[in-house]
Image (cartoon, rainbow, N blue to C red; front, side, top):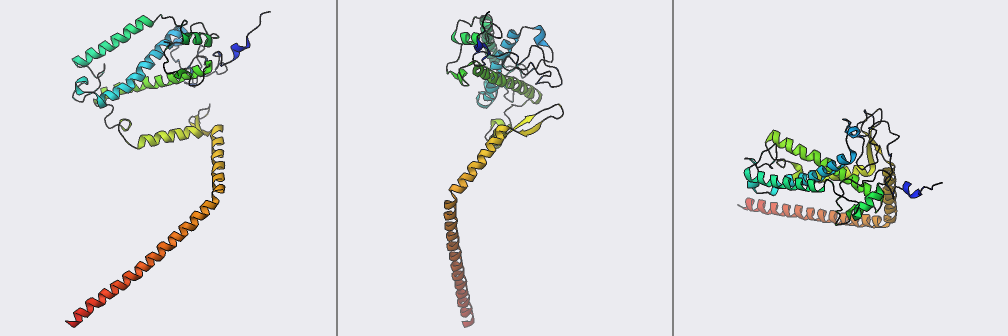
Length: 318
């Protein structure tokens, strides 16, 4: 009787299938049923497929297309505002110096530059569309990571990780999947962002960086970022079958709050003597300040009285 290697069920060794098998409804679209092929196996899978494309098209091809567009969008969403903030006017378009795009239009020079860039990307797409990856270092890891799912490894694998950031969450199957989740999430946000840039400038005729808090020094954006991070440190927003957007204190948040309270109480007890000494010093300083003020007041009143008498006596002598 054949034996089964228990390591295939270890999420650190291999990506496990069927993460959302027990969920009937989609996470992304709660009023629709979860698409049958979107079971949480792949990074970025939140059950979003309202058009049913996953039922009829190849999953690997669609995932490869998404990650390529995501990476381009992440570059573009940074390059677009930088071009308008720092680029020379002769590379921008129109009287308001907009970033060249299909919706904004092109000048001859910018058209040639954009056409050259996309020609290069098209050639790269052509040369790498049927590339082999399982003979490279990362490809071999991906093949083993995805062995429970399929034999194709991971879409978007170009064996490119010069800074070894891919293992930031651990040199394991679940660690690498977590990094892919992060990349896909940022890529989707970037695709939405660059689309909104193009639509905004096409409708208004003004630069996206114009009168925009995100692109000029101010205290509002950092304050909002700190507030957002602080909120996520203690709370989360949940949806259930009855209510949307319910703010709840997480178990980790409750633990952190209790820890802060304990540390504050401990610091107060350890520093009580210092606090008392500080209060004594503050009291003495306040007393000295009060006495000095009273003394100055008496001297000021005496000087005023002497001056008044001197002036009055001179007037009466006349």
